[in-house]
Image (cartoon, rainbow, N blue to C red; front, side, top):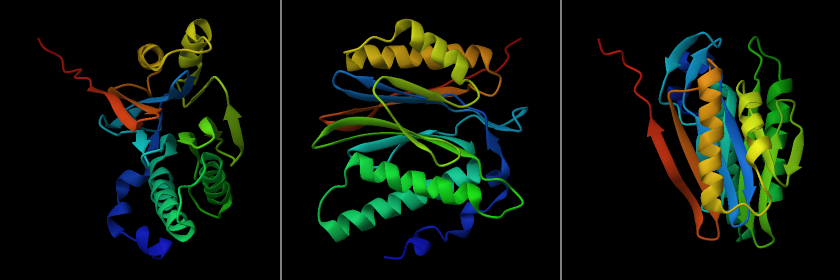
Length: 226
């Protein structure tokens, strides 16, 4: 299988790829696993809402999930690349990859993407959560390709300051996965109230010993009724 063949779908390259994602994403380490959450609003320059149904919390495998932020075309391309690379490497090795291996691959993709010559700068941000035989892990891939491991929580996107404030005040070590989901919803909701580029809905994914699961998915209807 050729990775280039995995991402050569011409449908990817429509005008929606030029729209940036103002967003709020977060990751949290809990007692029984990892919680990832993100809003759904997609904006053009942070001013015009171009989509209210863009899911930014993505399940990669039974053991891995991530959140995305940044330029939509680059986010989609890197997502397809990392999914293909995971499949290829696991087929070659005959075993599942460690979370750290996937984190390094994703960071390398981001590093190469942001430094390629282009008239459009490929700014992206990813939070990766996963489990392997050694435990549960949470990583952030910065827009420059940097890789940072977190033992508590991390936020990203235009609404990160609002979400961080909620987590800073309420996060505790050994937080249960159920309480982590509730706190994630609270944090993203606070950001949606204050950050104009975040909103429209929310998705929450958990990674536990049972695997990855989308435990919360809600679309908000803000239609005006006279």
